[in-house]
Length: 198
Image 1: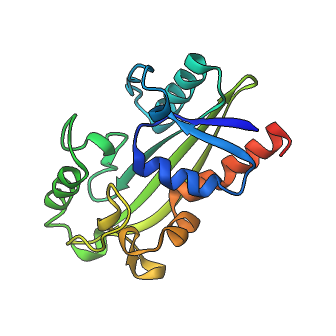
Image 2: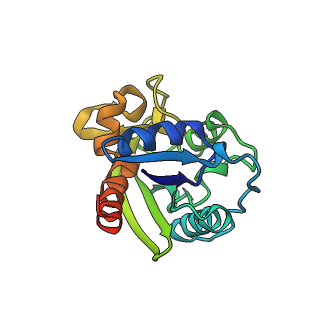
């Protein structure tokens, strides 16, 4: 059975991505399974650069085909912020809650009709054939107060208008179908099938 390495130590991401990949006949591992791997410095200026840095690092360190994603929340009212800095918006060691609080504070005076945002995920697959990148997007609105207990990151403040729910209010199956990461992973799965003949 082929092994795919997820270039992350984020258990929430591992769960979400593994659920999406479960129909494939592959074994999924993550950086959590390789504690000896050094931390990867995500110093790229774009989502594409960071996803490539992580995927390449995983493959070169282990020889195992590696999938990495980098995700940014881009808000119109804040000129695209937090963007590539989404995971460390409130500082290097910020928690999910710290980042959400900073975002809600930054947007507290933004009118309801100007709170549009886009979640964007870039997935990179790096293996012996080189790398391929795909992207997924999901448009939504930043709500004024957190809603829902599920998900992680900015999920409690990102509302998808068609469903009148934040990502944190949705069952994982629905979120995985419509989210930025879910759409990017759909494309990545097709890449994996083609490359590995699955």
